[in-house]
Length: 66
Image 1 (cartoon, rainbow, N blue to C red):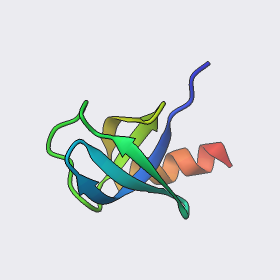
Image 2 (image 1 turned 135 degrees about the vertical axis):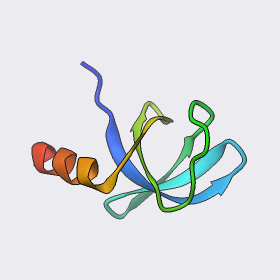
Image 3 (image 1 turned 90 degrees about the horizontal axis):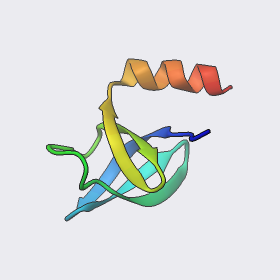
């Protein structure tokens, strides 16, 4: 089974971004998505942003993971 987690984009530098996962910041690759902006939320799997999501979806996912 594969897991993917939501995170908030903090900074963008080329094809990479710093993403905040509930206080833990990681560097990820955003090359699979277009038009990603600071402050938006993405689903991340294996170090790659694979989908942009809204805050409501992030809240639902967080509740399910708890």
